[in-house]
Image 1 (cartoon, rainbow, N blue to C red):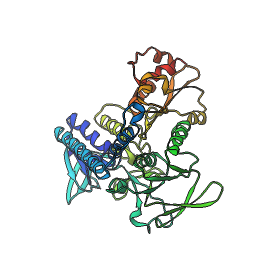
Image 2: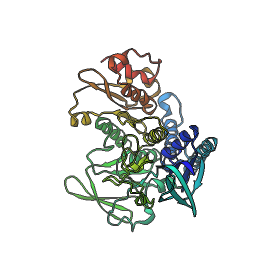
Image 3: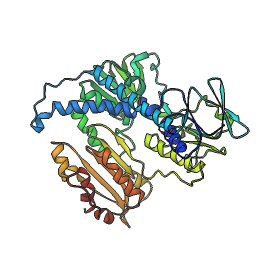
Image 4: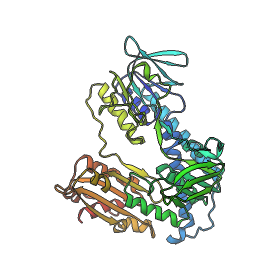
Length: 452
């Protein structure tokens, strides 16, 4: 009998297991594949490892901007892929070590909920039965492959995030269906290495949900690098290695590639878990319905991460796992989504948190906006010769509280946490003006904007 059973060893599950183990709970963690989930094995970590290799190559090729001549730099795609695999193995081992350190019982296999037991919930895995007083469901999400005619018949030409990360040879031509975060990150990686990349996106702009001004700037940067964008285009069918689509004017067109990446979104993994044996309620989108304490409609049953279908981000999942553990151990805690950062690890990066102008307008929020090029920060100029960068800050029109911060430029991903803290603490521009920032850093741009 365990205090807590967790199904799914991704960012929600393994962080929750670590936190619960540290509190002295006996924990059973069920994982059918590898610890770390999609993020560590088929998403965040492997893609960022690949993108860093591409960034190093880009820096070498354009080193003459900094007085370094390395235009004859070459890359080895096989070695790039091997390094990605080594990084993943190392970090998976690190997660495993954390589980052992906190006395978490790891059960490798597919867990199925059987129903209520005398003391809580009963779970079956590998022919064994396990009971736990509390259950936390963290089964994550999987790539959504829409029912496009011909997509199944295309076979291994069609890739999702999982298959494209397993490639050992670089495709000469890559067609990407979907210009979201995943699509743009792979467009960044492969275009840097010389692959001919075409993006087909149904919306009028890439990176829907992020600040559209920054999205348009990033698209323009990559268009100049040779990436082709077909926006407001609906895919009609896949014919072998060819994607046929209809443009915004109704004109039919097509584009061919050696590989076709489908990156149009993800869906919660809830099938086959036995949720019906407990009567767990689902949302209209197919995720597990939870409240602000990550509780389901069933007592002592919680859910966290992508399986809720709300915020499909690894850092959101980890925090949700913490909230669930805090509440089931008697420490009141609530999940807040006002300061969840969104990141795109292209080169340059995009990072944003809080309200965008579009969201503020839709919510009838009175706001002011201030923005500056990152070239107002000396460190940015020193390290990004001719690089594009922009920082935009939204504040409340009445009190001047920080509502949203959106940035294009390196290293936005490493700076955005400061904006997250400002929003969480409801800081005003006046308070931000009084913070001492280190000099020279790119993060000084926050203070520069605060004085506008």
